Length: 179
Ligand SMILES: [Zn+2]
Image (cartoon, rainbow, N blue to C red; front, side, top):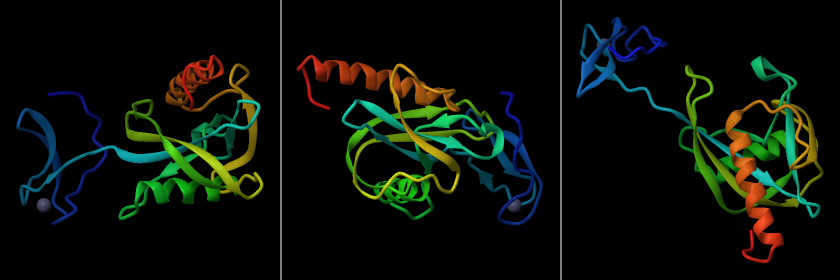
């Protein structure tokens, strides 16, 4: 059986014991009592790429948990029943005090760096429409950084995204394509 660390132990339907059993070729958490299958899916995260006139990117320093003191592209989780475009505006307001509008989806990536908490991230290219930068919620500082002088970053996928951004800004400067 594929090695998966069990994270859930009781059936959300009946309280029975969950165990991994193969179902359609995949190990699935299955209730011993009522046979309910609890599917494990990644959580959806949203992040805003905000670039200033000097081609610097806005980053936030995380203030708690295992990533305290490390920086990330401002981000957060989509609430159940919440539209992703609403979620990114809400999270960025909470974390940076900035009002933003989305220009477009920049990229979508799977995040596997925390095996017990896997997510799918949507990075939105965004522009500021109001507010002054001020850290809130999960962040204790927000600051613009040159793309080639980044601080210690918390999430490896942010580095992949920033590398894509470097290439895109380079193409834009070369007049080949607008961001
Ligand atoms: Zn059950």
